[in-house]
Image 1 (cartoon, rainbow, N blue to C red):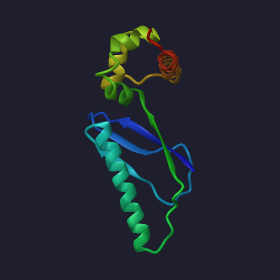
Image 2 (image 1 turned 90 degrees about the vertical axis):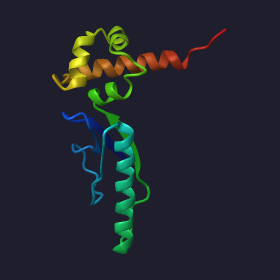
Image 3 (image 1 turned 180 degrees about the horizontal axis):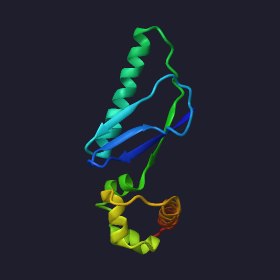
Length: 137
Protein backbone atom coordinates (compact mmCIF):
# COMPACT_ATOMS: atom_id res chain seq x y z
CA UNK A 1 0.00 0.00 0.00
CA UNK A 2 1.37 3.41 -0.95
CA UNK A 3 0.74 6.16 1.57
CA UNK A 4 1.21 9.79 0.60
CA UNK A 5 3.16 11.70 3.22
CA UNK A 6 3.19 15.49 3.20
CA UNK A 7 6.21 17.60 4.08
CA UNK A 8 5.03 21.02 5.19
CA UNK A 9 6.79 24.11 6.46
CA UNK A 10 5.16 25.78 9.45
CA UNK A 11 4.96 29.50 10.03
CA UNK A 12 7.61 29.11 12.75
CA UNK A 13 10.06 27.73 10.17
CA UNK A 14 9.95 24.12 11.40
CA UNK A 15 8.78 21.18 9.31
CA UNK A 16 6.04 18.59 9.78
CA UNK A 17 5.86 15.23 8.02
CA UNK A 18 2.50 13.42 8.18
CA UNK A 19 -0.04 11.39 6.24
CA UNK A 20 -2.06 13.29 3.66
CA UNK A 21 -5.23 14.21 5.58
CA UNK A 22 -7.26 14.32 2.36
CA UNK A 23 -6.81 10.58 1.85
CA UNK A 24 -8.28 7.72 3.83
CA UNK A 25 -5.86 4.85 4.42
CA UNK A 26 -7.68 2.94 7.21
CA UNK A 27 -4.42 2.01 8.90
CA UNK A 28 -5.73 2.55 12.40
CA UNK A 29 -2.91 4.94 13.28
CA UNK A 30 -1.22 8.12 12.16
CA UNK A 31 2.40 9.18 12.19
CA UNK A 32 3.97 12.60 12.68
CA UNK A 33 7.54 13.76 12.33
CA UNK A 34 8.73 17.22 13.31
CA UNK A 35 12.05 18.98 13.04
CA UNK A 36 14.00 22.14 12.34
CA UNK A 37 14.99 20.70 8.96
CA UNK A 38 13.24 18.38 6.53
CA UNK A 39 15.79 15.67 7.23
CA UNK A 40 15.14 15.93 10.99
CA UNK A 41 11.38 15.78 10.41
CA UNK A 42 11.65 12.71 8.16
CA UNK A 43 13.93 11.02 10.71
CA UNK A 44 11.38 11.79 13.44
CA UNK A 45 8.61 10.41 11.19
CA UNK A 46 10.48 7.11 10.89
CA UNK A 47 11.08 7.13 14.65
CA UNK A 48 7.30 7.45 15.09
CA UNK A 49 6.90 4.50 12.74
CA UNK A 50 9.31 2.40 14.85
CA UNK A 51 7.48 3.38 18.02
CA UNK A 52 4.13 2.45 16.45
CA UNK A 53 5.49 -0.95 15.40
CA UNK A 54 6.73 -1.53 18.96
CA UNK A 55 3.34 -0.54 20.38
CA UNK A 56 1.59 -2.99 18.06
CA UNK A 57 4.05 -5.71 19.12
CA UNK A 58 3.42 -5.00 22.82
CA UNK A 59 -0.33 -5.30 22.21
CA UNK A 60 0.08 -8.48 20.12
CA UNK A 61 -1.41 -6.75 17.11
CA UNK A 62 -0.23 -7.37 13.57
CA UNK A 63 1.39 -4.31 12.03
CA UNK A 64 0.90 -3.78 8.28
CA UNK A 65 4.32 -4.36 6.74
CA UNK A 66 3.49 -3.58 3.13
CA UNK A 67 3.39 0.21 3.55
CA UNK A 68 5.38 2.30 1.08
CA UNK A 69 5.69 6.02 1.76
CA UNK A 70 5.61 8.58 -1.04
CA UNK A 71 6.85 11.94 0.22
CA UNK A 72 5.33 15.11 -1.23
CA UNK A 73 6.50 18.65 -0.52
CA UNK A 74 4.47 21.78 -0.15
CA UNK A 75 6.08 24.65 -2.12
CA UNK A 76 7.69 26.42 0.88
CA UNK A 77 9.25 23.16 2.09
CA UNK A 78 10.63 22.30 -1.32
CA UNK A 79 12.11 25.76 -1.81
CA UNK A 80 13.63 25.76 1.68
CA UNK A 81 15.09 22.26 1.28
CA UNK A 82 16.71 22.90 -2.09
CA UNK A 83 17.66 26.56 -1.61
CA UNK A 84 21.38 25.79 -1.77
CA UNK A 85 20.93 24.06 -5.13
CA UNK A 86 18.05 25.90 -6.79
CA UNK A 87 18.05 29.65 -6.26
CA UNK A 88 14.85 31.64 -6.39
CA UNK A 89 16.31 33.57 -9.34
CA UNK A 90 17.01 30.32 -11.18
CA UNK A 91 13.57 28.94 -10.37
CA UNK A 92 12.08 32.22 -11.52
CA UNK A 93 13.78 31.75 -14.89
CA UNK A 94 12.45 28.20 -15.16
CA UNK A 95 8.89 29.05 -14.16
CA UNK A 96 8.40 32.65 -15.19
CA UNK A 97 7.42 33.48 -11.60
CA UNK A 98 9.04 36.54 -10.07
CA UNK A 99 11.70 35.55 -7.49
CA UNK A 100 10.21 38.04 -5.02
CA UNK A 101 6.90 36.19 -5.30
CA UNK A 102 8.70 32.86 -4.76
CA UNK A 103 10.31 34.35 -1.67
CA UNK A 104 6.84 35.21 -0.34
CA UNK A 105 5.99 31.49 -0.63
CA UNK A 106 9.15 30.47 1.25
CA UNK A 107 8.54 32.92 4.10
CA UNK A 108 4.82 32.17 4.34
CA UNK A 109 3.76 35.71 3.48
CA UNK A 110 1.67 34.27 0.66
CA UNK A 111 0.46 30.85 -0.34
CA UNK A 112 0.70 29.80 -4.00
CA UNK A 113 -2.49 28.99 -5.84
CA UNK A 114 -3.08 25.47 -7.14
CA UNK A 115 -2.34 26.77 -10.64
CA UNK A 116 1.00 28.22 -9.49
CA UNK A 117 1.93 25.00 -7.67
CA UNK A 118 1.22 23.07 -10.87
CA UNK A 119 3.30 25.53 -12.90
CA UNK A 120 6.29 25.14 -10.57
CA UNK A 121 5.94 21.36 -10.50
CA UNK A 122 5.70 21.00 -14.29
CA UNK A 123 8.61 23.39 -14.86
CA UNK A 124 10.84 21.43 -12.48
CA UNK A 125 9.79 18.09 -13.98
CA UNK A 126 10.58 19.34 -17.48
CA UNK A 127 13.97 20.58 -16.28
CA UNK A 128 14.58 17.23 -14.58
CA UNK A 129 13.81 15.36 -17.80
CA UNK A 130 16.24 17.59 -19.69
CA UNK A 131 18.94 16.88 -17.09
CA UNK A 132 18.28 13.13 -17.19
CA UNK A 133 19.06 13.13 -20.92
CA UNK A 134 22.22 15.19 -20.55
CA UNK A 135 25.43 13.82 -22.05
CA UNK A 136 28.82 15.49 -22.15
CA UNK A 137 31.21 15.08 -25.06
